[in-house]
Amino acid sequence: MASSSMAAVACATGTALSPSTATAQRPSVQGRLVFPAAPSRSHSLRLRAAGRRSTRASKVVVAALADPLKVMISGAPASGKGTQCELIKTKFGLVHISAGDLLRAEIAAGSDNGKAAKDFMEKGQLVPDEIVVNMVKERLLQPDAQENGWLLDGYPRSYSQAMALETLEIRPDTFILLDVPEELLVERVVGRRLDPVTGKIYHLKYSPPENEEIASRLTQRFDDTEEKVKLRLQTYYQNIESLLSTYEEIIVKVKGDRTVGDVFAEIEKLLASSLNKKTEMVSSS
Image (spheres, rainbow, N blue to C red):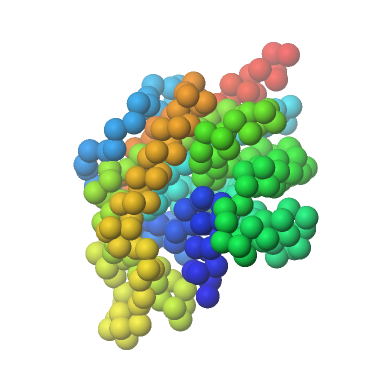
């Protein structure tokens, strides 16, 4: 079953691969829920808000950059990260790279990295950082990522993974952190349901099923309970805290308890400003 396969890869890499979250209105992003904004206090992290950076750019500057845009993004389960990744990828043309997706692809392809990872997974063990980091490195070195820039989704997730990337001189221009209040994250996760027939994700409160027939067949992931999601969130917060010292100068907190459009508008300004600065540097050199 697809969901059990995703969970296995998540456990193996230490990466949370929960069904994509989101809202009641659907933008161009397909197969994702889009949650409405909800005011509340967020989990406390010692980060600056994105608003402190320049937001003067309203259009994306298209230019041949010697050093294209490089972005890392992180967010707790149900933070809406998957939806924002799709919007960023579409707007800026970045290559979207997820460690979990890479691992599944390498295993399916039977590559050396995939075979090594599969051996550990079959023993019920975590895939060592060096194997996953090597997969990420090789993907980042491919021509499309080198030419168009990249969006590294949900990775690194620990200090050791971050240090491994630093050793390889893999460092982003910006690290985006989607910050959503814990109580809202729990509500989003606990209310999620999956239609096993169509694969569509619903939410009992924000995006309920269209009729009783669909409602009667909806299923819930085994770990989408309040108790288990709080444990996942605790692990996530610990992981993020461990990354602060590495990315302190480039990590930017973006409030994720607003509408999808408002969240993306802030991210778009942030990345457009970074892109413009790179363009100006190329022009002046």
